[in-house]
Image (cartoon, rainbow, N blue to C red; front, side, top):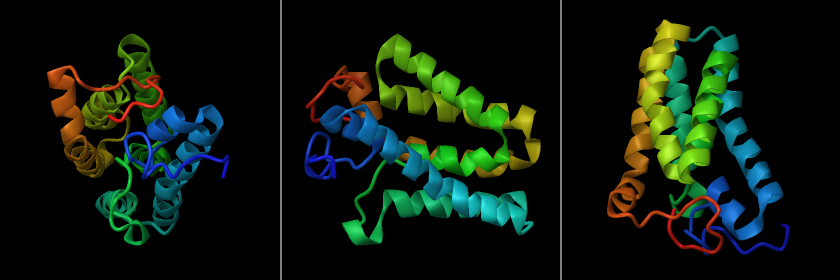
Length: 174
């Protein structure tokens, strides 16, 4: 689609929106982002409407993220889970997601690092959740820990000054 190379074999070899942005541009990246968000939103919304408890919804969101990060049909090599985690948090409230997306955009604008923006956003997410929807603090924290763990290599590259910025086309790091 869009005559792009397979993102699992190009750029950072990651199928996420950041790598697709680098190798294919804004439209394909936006579509990847939207569908990755929906992977988290749909199951959590269904669970929410079925009356699942906040902890159960947390496990539903965690399962969606784990399915995205370790997809069965791609030899368990998927994305970082950021967009899917945002999608899983979306049913909890627009306030939370709006604050987190704003934080992500501000960090991107200031630093240019998508990974740093994701790490900072998920680090503050449990705190914001405590004030917006306290019952969901534990489930959101579970998702955030998963995202931070998934960014281990990015954290190492950031500390070493070797992380690529979001607009670095064709770079191999993410």
